[in-house]
Length: 495
Ligand code: GLN
Image (cartoon, rainbow, N blue to C red):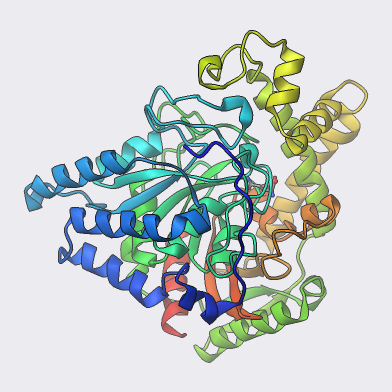
């Protein structure tokens, strides 16, 4: 476990320079590794050794991982390789990393918070149990913003992760460790969580695929709650088929999570193998794009041309008011967080003997010392929003706004249409140039829409902007993930 924030030792340069520096594993090589494992050419042991070798080579610079279980991974790979072929699961031998707010039995699990230092998860989250069942090899846990609150993976108590495409820059957040691990080739795939964009945004910044499924598609049992009406587990991978397989493995009804839905789980990997574009796509129009920096506007225009060259009719639409959406999202998320995080009272979680804070400290001291500034701010804001006097004027009003935005957003979809949006307003920022808080919140304006409306959205790597990875998101009506996979596959083909 890395306990300390380690100081910066950034290298310089963009895009290709960084490939030369070796932090980013070039995409063709990542794809080659994915295909070799799937075809049975590579054993679980070989895939695991390659991943561990990459971790040894680059993770001191990338800092995607918080906890690495080398022995566990090797033992698991050995036992998988002994299985007869016909017994092999759909994720056979796949080296997967898990965001540190998802419980993995007996592993340290901190959610990026000092308050949980030394805490070991006593059980597996449902998604982890399902990864194991499908034959994955669990490598370790990945870095995040404390309790998932952030957009850059700079606010965890372990210090920031770095973008493998440029280690002076953020990886995006809050699942930045997961995205950076996939981009660096230290994991084939990873789980993240997405409350307001935390899978899609780091995926875009690191140049990998990421999906936020429909709310209810995946169980949240064993996932540290941030804002329960938004939280979803999502998946990241550099290979679309792997992404589909991982989502397929973890999705589906779970009696232990009342919000998980009793829906059939389609074969997402098969959908990724059937490239298909809708006849028309609704794309966010000029007014909404004005907040993007010029290079991102150009990169977004190039994405539209790529769809048009494939014969898709791109129809411009105006999004629901994203300023209002940001306000509603943050008010609701803080309100839910203030209630969810009340359990971290210094009595129930964390182990004093391992450096955690418990018992000896009063509630106040535990939370002041254990929780970071941003988390405390949000708890206070949330408690205020829920208090008498504000409940109707702010909390209820925000839930009404949420419903209206969801209606407006759904209203933008024509028959069998998908919606195309940017993910971020610009390239990943420099680590040492944090924006003012209000600007940071506003930079979530595009990704929070799917979260407010409980829609599935996939983040697609779409080339570069100013030499750094650029991504866009495709959104579908509820339960439309298959269409997203097929469209993503067609988009990749068109590159
Ligand atoms: N940046 C958003 C927030 O801080 C979203 C984070 C997330 O999806 N976990 O709330």
